[in-house]
Length: 393
Length: 179
Image (cartoon, rainbow over all chains, first blue to last red; front, side, top):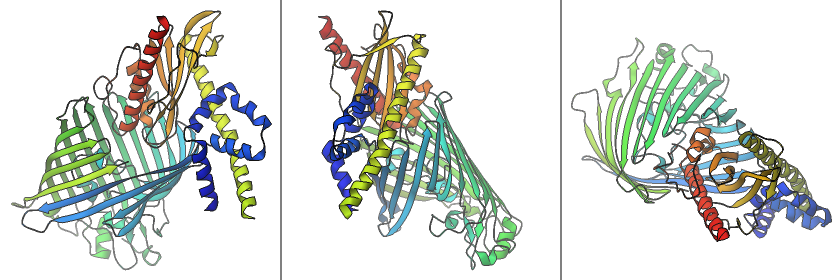
């Protein structure tokens, strides 16, 4: 601890911009010559000056108000996330995000080491976000419209979905392509006494969140992002594997299920107009056996999509932006069911959200919207008004 | 005891970091030379650092935390200029290179080193080609004549602002010098 404080003080003393200057200075061998005639202490100082690293501090937060029709509203500090990064050198970096949910629950959202071999190849290991769809990776409140994240990113993609694992990521500048491929820990489907997966939200309760995770068989995850057409970004994600189960039921038929999840996403910007959309489909193997063992109602297929369009009402040169948007979601966590359960029509959800996102400054947003939520059941419409403030720094 | 430990660990840390730091800047230089060769179609050029010469000298800013300007010539005739700048990304900095012809028309922009994961999309050759063939009088507006990249907004804005700043400063200095 002492050492860290000492280091920090030294870094502050020698000036913040010293590092970048140094990188370029050394093009002319200037710093090499200077190393010759100094004592040990000066060398430490000078070298710390050259340390291309340091602490990073940041975070994001959402304080939200949800008001359903004829019921109590809820006001909540939904999430407050503190980001810390430490750069050991130009290649080696540690990133962590500590999350406070609803003020009182603490989680670690990310904690991984990234080792950069070059721009096109990084190796990383630790607790990482699973690259699936848009929101799971890009969930800071200023990056999406709507007070609440799209509902499909709760029920189908259990955002914020993070797992422990390792893998590679990188870019090709020539192809305008970003790739990620990981081996992950996987969901827990049975804890020994109960099944954790169910029809209403699929795998959400099976997330292990990096906490004393059960692991026996690896899961695979990959994502490709293509941004070679100006204004357009396309994503293709996949997640394949089998869930984990507690030792005592590991060999019991139905305690584990297979999962293949596929996601397609697109984001488009043209001047003041933006649009995005996402399609996700999950097929689940052995749902029949799982339901038999656990008396749950897990589907054999969950599918859905959302599309959203937004328009900035302020001039493009303004620092502030005021987006008006509309989003339509249609997803069913009982899209296909095994023969031992009946399809639940209330799991086929349709939601329309429309409202405003007012970006007061880059990194600060005030949001207000109206949601109409319905299911495949007749006359199931419910309205809800939401408001919130979000920051990202 | 503790102070010995601190000194020892600092010395160890410094040793590792110095060698890495030099390695990286050598990598930048190597990449820069490679780009110059590609764009000016020759290997036997001379490169002179003119950053501090009166016709080019200008201050850094929020959008440009460091920079170098090199004059590129071959057998005494001017080929063009190389500009190496450092600009901020979300939590770090990145280095970019701009190659100009002898009339300061942009021939190529390239990101030399991008250190963060998020925002690296600005290194896309396709995106950077939007700045190609532009002259110092041109100004770029994010979302207008420079397209956005979803998921890389901060770096896209930073690069756009940085190039605007560099163009305006170079334009001013050159105008003063030619008086």
